[in-house]
Amino acid sequence: MMRSLLALALAAPLFAAAQDLPQPSPKGKVEQVVGLTNVSFEYSRPSAKGRVVFGELVPFGKLWRLGANANTIFGFDGTVVIEGNKVEAGKYSLFVTPEQGAWVFHLNKNTELWGTDGYEASQDVAVWKAAADGSEYTETLTISFDEVKDDKARVDVRWEKTRASFTIEADATEKAMANIKEAMAKPEIKAGSYNRCAQYCIDKGVNLKEALTWAEKANSMEPEKKYWMLHTLALAQGANGMTKEAITTANESMALAEKEGDNSYVMKNKTKIAEWSK
Figure 1 (tube, rainbow, N blue to C red):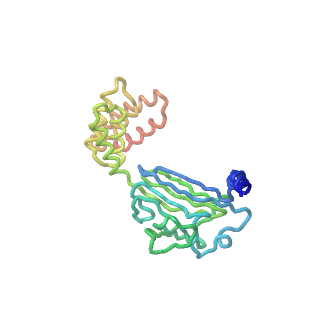
Figure 2: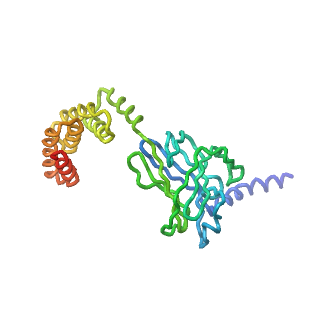
Figure 3: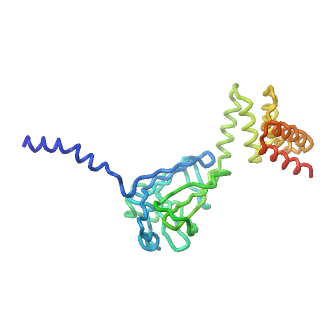
């Protein structure tokens, strides 16, 4: 009996080591901030290995776990809108029913599934359709983000010769305005913070009077004029109907940008001056 126990004890590390081997469909995770919301996918990534994937390995018209092994998890820490579907913060399972030319995605509350066993459509919180087009060859299933701008991002699912894409939106305005209010309450706020807050409000078209005050404050705090801050001030003036002042400020910003060799700001100012001059 003692020998058997000793043999098992010695063999245990070997069994553990044997289990720690490369997986045919290794786990992957991709994260992206959209607006001010953290968005992530956790999934197992199978490879094509010379097989025809869609229509054979993954049948058309049949629910698929969008990966291998355990179900794919799609999570976000704020409310989002996915192809017109508003979804509250949380973690969800993501499934798909592939068809030729289009996929139907299913976002499901149950995150404890293995594959599609136990899936219930009644647990779906959102269902949407996405075009599935031809793509450059992708050996390993890949979920990625592209066109991350204006509180939006495009999610791409690529495998073998197919790419399906959908859009996720996460409006950051409410959270950003709360952050601005908090920043403005601090006594040690810097010129750069005033400038960034003004720039955000101008871009969003909100709190324009406050944005003008903040842009003026930012420029007054700098011992030497900064062309990027002057550009923000010009935008704030223009947004408040002060076109003559905006043109004057933009010309000043452009002259400093030319001196510093920043052609991007030269062009930004030229564009706005032409717009205001009309």
